[in-house]
Length: 258
Image (cartoon, rainbow, N blue to C red; front, side):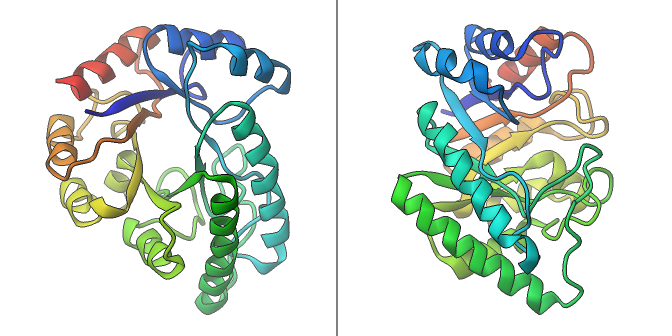
């Protein structure tokens, strides 16, 4: 059975951060964070009714640009402190900083060899930190067609090749169904082909990045595929509701609990 989480970066935006987190938990979901307010962390950590499913594992810098690697790793270490405070053992990670429009901040090196070697070395160091702190990082592929221009790992197989090279059980794939559909399609086969690498799943529909059931993705078939491959981890709603936020979360629950 899947565990269901909701990202507080996309729902209930009329509520203050701390109340948003609490409301998602009250509705019976684990909570996934895009970011946080430092002043609210102690109260969230002390609330036994709140389970934090995942937090961002990095901040600034870039793992693919050698000039940004140390800044990237510094952010990784700082975010580990927050994860520990919140009792969260799962962190999401990407290739580097993304600005408020979704564009990659650090331009990737022109030579692909530099890009891949830099990413490999940086992710090996992340794996060492993961082992030291007993956490798992889920590396996300992002689409470059509508949301994240310049992102260096737009395909699931790109991330998987990197994971195979690093060869750590603490570095997994964050399979984002929304990004898969936009960048490459063939969602069901992608899930089947790379199931053994998946540590976390994100969902939203296409177009619009609204909740499942509002667009073209056959989410009942996605649910069936995840069950067929034996996935029992977290499925996180990372979608902007098409209408009412509570109804969007309820629709998500109905589809993934059917």
